[in-house]
Length: 164
Image 1: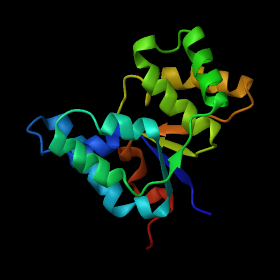
Image 2: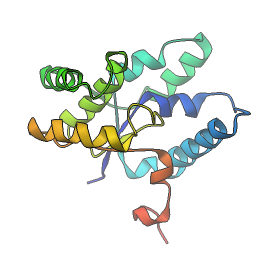
Image 3: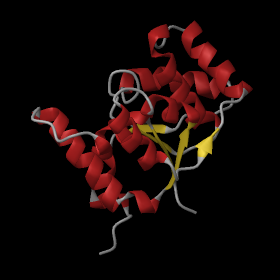
C-alpha cells in the first residue's frame, strides 16, 4: 500500500502559476514540479472540497488551470469529527481564526488518517512549533496528525521511492 498525501492548495497553485522572477517563489515552483513529476505516483493523493473552493478563486484562466490539475484527485469529506477537531484548535489559540481554512486542511487530513500533508504554506501549516501543538490536540482526540511537509522534504533519494 502506498503512503497517502493530502495535497494542500498551495501546491496546486505553485504547479499552475506563471514562472516567478522572485528567487524563493521560483525555487518553490521548481521543487513543486519536481515532486509532482517524479514522486507523486509513489503516493495515493487526496484533496478536499476546500482545496477546490480555494483553487477556484481569483483569475478565471488560472482558476481553471488549478481546477483541471485537481480534477482527478479523490476528495476527502468534511465530517463532524473534522469540525470538532478544528474548533478545538481554534479554542486553544494554536492558529488564529483567519487561518480557519488552514486548520480545516490539517484536520481533514488527520481525521482521514492521511500520512502526509504536502504544503508550501510555512506560516500556518508547515511550521514545527505549530505542528507540536496540533499533534498534541489530535492525540487527545485519538487521531494521528499527518506529517506536515514541503516538496523539498520529499524529493530526495533517501525516501526509498526512487529505483536505483
